[in-house]
Length: 216
Image 1 (cartoon, rainbow, N blue to C red):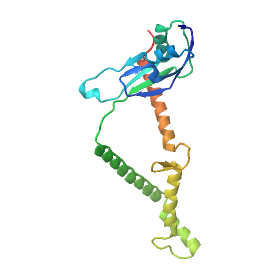
Image 2 (image 1 turned 30 degrees about the horizontal axis):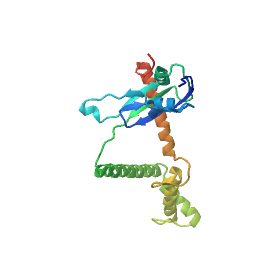
Image 3 (image 1 turned 135 degrees about the vertical axis):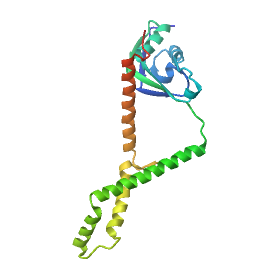
Image 4 (image 1 turned 90 degrees about the vertical axis):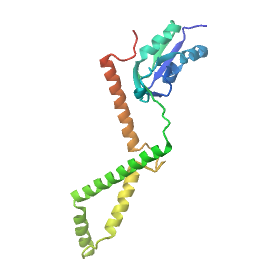
């Protein structure tokens, strides 16, 4: 079997794994015309996340790898293979511990989060309305248009509430689990930015401390 094939590697910046024993094929996408060689490389072990004491066993673990480490492992079996990387030079692998939690506990957390968000958003809206004196603006606007004093509840408050709720739904681009359009929501965009910044920090910190899994 020829082992001088060209192997193309593509590693994403971050990969999740639920298996403590990580193989190359679990975290790196590969392409090669030699299918038997490709299958063997994908099954080669890249790393094994260590077991920890009982109190730490249920926590996720993160490890940073250099793509050169993957190339080194490939060359152990196929020294003449040409390897070309078209992805990240350094990437993060996170071992996620699956925990079987009771459904009532997950529902309780969801309810608590909804309560906090509801009252937090309500307080923010009320503080904003008070800060810009929305009540006084409505009273003056109503008197100028209608020519008399504004009642306790008028069309302005009703349409303001409807417009506020509609604006929030349109801005966040989803209602419940259904999206209004196919565009990513602002929350999804911010979460992706946060994940990218977090992965970059993991990589830089590991590089500075010399904890990156790299070639010897």
